Amino acid sequence: MSEDKLRVVRDRVRSFPDFPVPGVLFRDISPLLKDPVAFKALIDLLEDHLRASFPKIDVIAGLDSRGFLIGPPLAQRLGVGFVLIRKKGKLPGPTESISYSLEYGKAELEVQSDAVEAGQKVVIVDDLLATGGTMRAACELLARLKADILECLVVIELKALRGAAKLEAIRFHSLLQYD
Ligand code: PRP
Ligand code: ADE
Image (cartoon, rainbow, N blue to C red; front, side, top):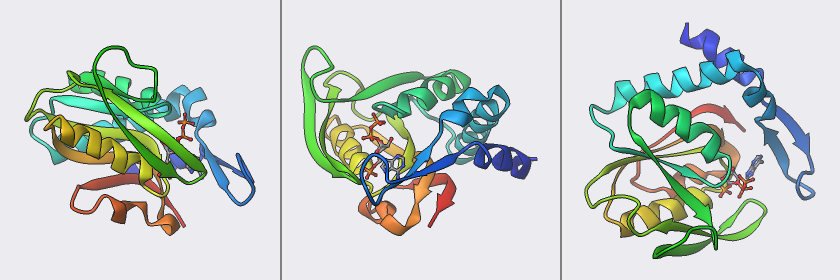
């Protein structure tokens, strides 16, 4: 059953060579989002994984921008809130910020200082882990707010880039792995 759902999800990820820069094989989740059966299967799988892994989750945090597509439906299923971790300059009020590098460039991430309370149990979600720079930066931001980071959760892991190692002791899970 869950193997069937995983196959439906995998079948809706397509690849584009040399995007956005030469040498990068871009994994595109647009067909997955466009197909309601596959999108539902994705959220089912992520929900099942989190329910089986953690007795209590307070908040889902999503990464700008594709984490915003996956995090809110997942948070709704779990009956918890959703928090935005955004690229620089998008969030009003007091923020924490951090710069980081990713597979094809550099960027800066921010979170509102009141986004989570100290000790709240947070799962961070995104579509994809490549070098792990983005996810690691998000962990650092939430650690500054004294969140209890339960897990970093992604749909796709690009194994060859060894991004999971960058997360060190923080628990990590991916649904689909590519070399
Ligand atoms: C992509 C992807 C992840 C990040 C992974 O986002 O959605 O957030 O790169 O790369 P890393 O593991 O090497 O850090 P991107 O920064 O391209 O932004 P987007 O979602 O707005 O396209
Ligand atoms: N973000 C970083 N690397 C990526 C890739 N290869 N495909 C899609 N999104 C990415």
